[in-house]
Length: 81
Image 1: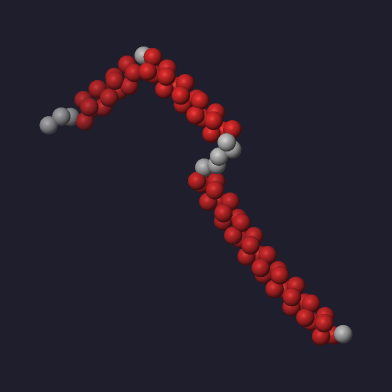
Image 2: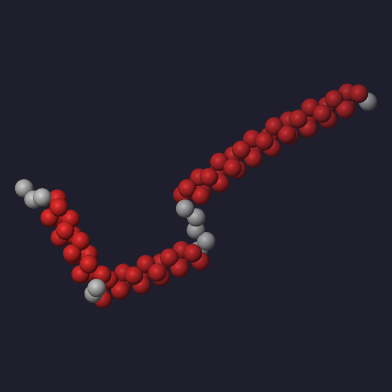
């Protein structure tokens, strides 16, 4: 059986070699290009999206409660006239 230390060391050496070759430069350039493209698309992370969804849900709930209160108040005012 192979020791995981040996596999980790081999993996580290391979990564080091790849990063020093044109393939490593290509990866860095491609990563930079994609990040730039995603930034221009104004994308958000899943976490940001989920957080904003929760904020919107709470705002909708509050709006519904306020609409109900307004209707009740309008009904009281209509009944006093």
